[in-house]
Length: 184
Image 1 (cartoon, rainbow, N blue to C red):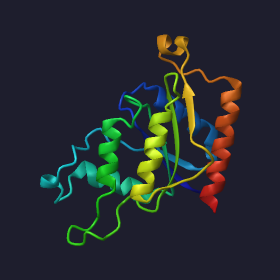
Image 2 (cartoon, rainbow, N blue to C red):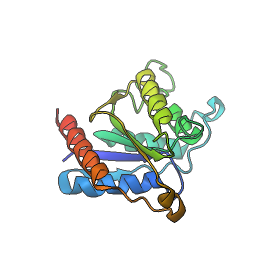
Image 3 (cartoon, rainbow, N blue to C red):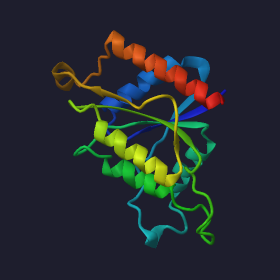
């Protein structure tokens, strides 16, 4: 059974993107083992503290290394990747061997999907930035096109994600495509 690691780009416990990730987890059901990356304590990337590797960074790397696939769910801040998520990816893209700068990173060669929920732009800027960053750090995007969803005024007010039937169909198809790609 594939192991999927969900990486939510918002640390807010009740974030819309965490809600979206939970919905994807529900759709996946028993077809894969799903876990969530806890990256609350990952420090700012700083070469002065890179070695020995800080424990929160080591834990994040271990979770990524043990996953068969990653699925990112993120808002966008100023039409870009949130700073915290970028910082996490900077840590994950660093070499694993202190003495060999050409050694692999925890994230290089991983396969990932991207989804996001946000304002009217449906996280288009974040998704574009994240895909460009993937190319630089050696992550393969899989599972069909990245999915972005725009929140309604009611969702902003209620703080609850309410996916419409058409949206649910797109999400279900994305899950099927993603799981099929992981099996290849």
